[in-house]
Length: 121
Image (tube, rainbow, N blue to C red; front, side, top):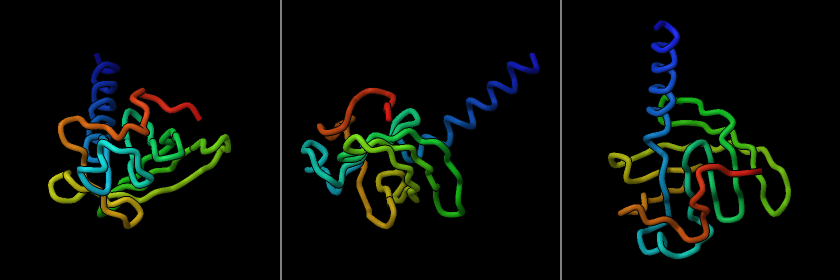
């Protein structure tokens, strides 16, 4: 019983961390349906950008957002990256390293991003 309670609390904490920034993001709604270098997708522990697929290695809460430590693969090269992000306007906007993106509406996903739940760097 105690193990089940601990597992439930861990899963709940993990899910609540992902909610604010998971989704598909673009510079504007029009670009949500077009491949674009500024588009990103964050889902199930993965971060996808125009030419990179990353596993989110670590998520750290900050006073005004999050820091993500990423293990990425870009153009066949393995990279480690760190990004800072925060949500604005009730979760409809995302600031990533100083650039503001909007959440793609209606489940629209930028076509240059995989729909899989996991990256494979």
